[in-house]
Length: 82
Image (tube, rainbow, N blue to C red; front, side, top):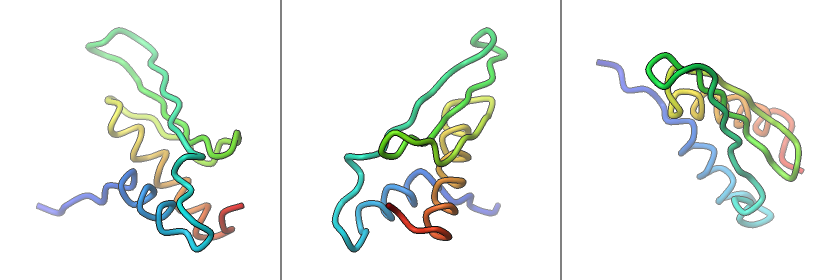
């Protein structure tokens, strides 16, 4: 079995170890759910300093959160954190 990368942990570590200091106080996840609990679609957004840097969906909150974190991490690694 191939172990999946937990991008939520990776994003948190990336922001904690940023050269300008710990940036984790400036980010959060915004979570929404559509549909009934047994058949819901969850959406997560990574909000950093008021702007959205990643969005993901999934059948559960964890999947949506990891997808959003992956997008945000790729953005920050490509364009930097400001």
